[in-house]
Image 1 (cartoon, helix red, strand yellow):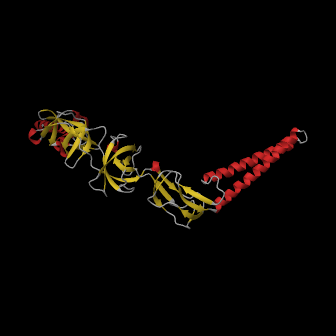
Image 2 (cartoon, rainbow, N blue to C red):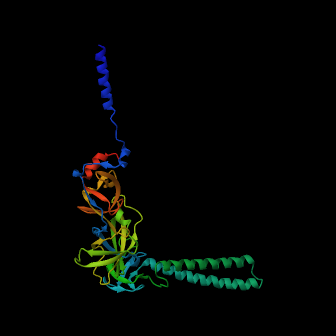
Length: 364
């Protein structure tokens, strides 16, 4: 009986020892991994110039720094149109004339204010003579002075009103709409006799200098962070295949669009021949301004763990370490890594998934 008990205890101890096999810690990945070389293939890392990034869709737009949208500052009827679409105009050149009852009323108010100011100034001059002669009470002189100041203020108010309407010195109800910038009349939204109002949804004229346009593209955030102001980019318009233009980066957005995860980039695009048009579609070729070279790797050499990407580096025969990397340019078969590894290191290009499985999914 005693011998049976001893055998049972020995068996239980053996099972307990088996159940206490060491558990791999998540932090054990820092140590080199081992694998039989017949399942692993390596290659030496070699630096190479980054290829040109894939072209990004963009659109051509007006250069808003040299564009004006002219609307009616008050209600009126179109009496004369002086320009046509496509016509070049100078700054201050008349575009159209409106017959406006509101302007006529404003002009009449100014005339009335001029007449009243003259009358009050004359009354003040007489009051000063009488006050100096001692035949007028001080309060009467002060009242005349106050009336003169009020009439002068009213005159200034009416003149400012006319200046705001762009009709300073107007004596009739004719309001001239003028272009504030030199450029080309690219749009006209009025006809003779048409009634216009300040609250119309579209401007009456659009005048823009078409010698320079904007090119607007939404760029992936990784690429946008490598761009520099003044950097040259190549542009191809969909409507002009085979023709390449050069633009310069003028602005890189300060915010990432939360929906697209992209950053707006605006380029200045020379358009001396006026072949390009606003709202054309184009493709822009960006070249990162910071990282100009990287290490090319087949995509299967790069493993993903959460939001991070890694490659495996051979440290000695059948021994490998995992290195976090940054992918600067991603292609369908080959990607370029610009940080995390160095030229000359032996990189695992086949069998990376086997090493990842050995390292465990929870390793950081």
